[in-house]
Length: 239
Image (tube, rainbow, N blue to C red):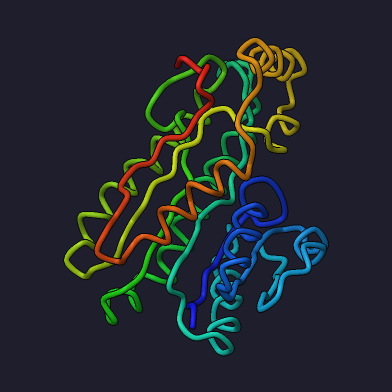
């Protein structure tokens, strides 16, 4: 009997691809995102879908409590929800900084805080934080986004130290250029075009399912094995 997996940002991109893969392996799922319909359209078995913003700590916690009442305690949390708003820092609307800090960092903290105590108590569990190559490398137009993903990298590394004695895995997955909705959220047309042109210049990017396969690999390893930081990118991506 597989144990409960929670996936945030599950309405598109990496989140929905991860959901499809883990559902095929018979994991019961709690899917969380702000948009309910795309999650329900996946039509996955043994799955609860909740329209919750990860920035809403109380709503996030209540969704997990409801799923645990049906499927048991969360064994794996995949903190996938994130936004990428690229711009030169001096011309970027500070509201975009705030949005990325709230979703990319505070949303991850909210999820971890909800599940950690129970994982420590039973000495089992896995937390997967979806970061980015931009969490360990810098790129043009990425200043505020890099700041949030560098924070996720530091958070993941530090929390792994805290949880290793309790047999709890903390895994960071760091994708490079991938095909998701994130680019469409960039509010500066010239920056969005620059990113799209760069993707074409390297002959295309990896798919959401490529990244989901990496998550599946890391999660499916024995509890005694922790993939600390898995970087995945197009072969032709040089930086």
